[in-house]
Amino acid sequence: MTTRIAKFIADTGFASRRAAEDLIASGRVTVNGIKIDTPVTFVSSDDEIAVDGAVLHAREDTQLYAFHKPINTMTTTHDPAHRKTIYDVLDAQYKNLKYIGRLDYKTSGLLLMTNDGALAQKLTLPSSNIARTYIAHVSRMDEKGLNRARGGVTVDGIKYRPMKIEVMEKNILRVTVTEGKKNEIRIVLRACGCPVIGLHRVSFGPVRLGNLSVGKIRKIEQKTIDALLKTL
Image (cartoon, helix red, strand yellow):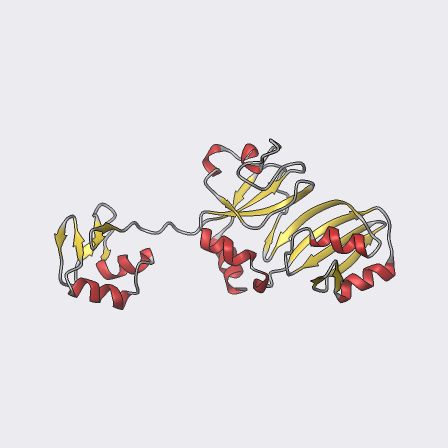
């Protein structure tokens, strides 16, 4: 399969298509070592395209995965305390993926992973306002405290946005947040008189954990990725 040279350059993210055409016209682009001067040039994946001598590489398609993080694993590539990490659980073929945000050592459930570092960064920004839903087991209930959390609180000088909290059954809550501050559910519920003793994430935006087994990973289909990107 071939594509126009300007489109190839644009698809790598090096320059816009119009800027790529200007680079070509100025003689700064080579194909297999040969300088070209017209955008009406078609290239394939076997060709070597360079700008000012620097070889360009086709951008990988964005891939997104749902991983069911086990409890007692660190969301990191290496833990100085030598605790088990998510990469000790993942099969070798997935160990180049980047995690999107973090789940703490004692939190299990849905962790998104991707091959796109820029996407990972965008999805973890507080400004993304992406809803993340958790099932929280608490040691005791305090309805007044839950109402405080529902309205937004300040703990140790840090403001936390209002949380959507549904009481599912005795001492079990369904909690949805949009900010993603570190340990925010544990911190807020403890401050509101409902200490968390177990936390499990079940969704991140339109992505659901579903019946994915602990320690397993599945690829997310493109339409769900598109739905997630539309929220940014």
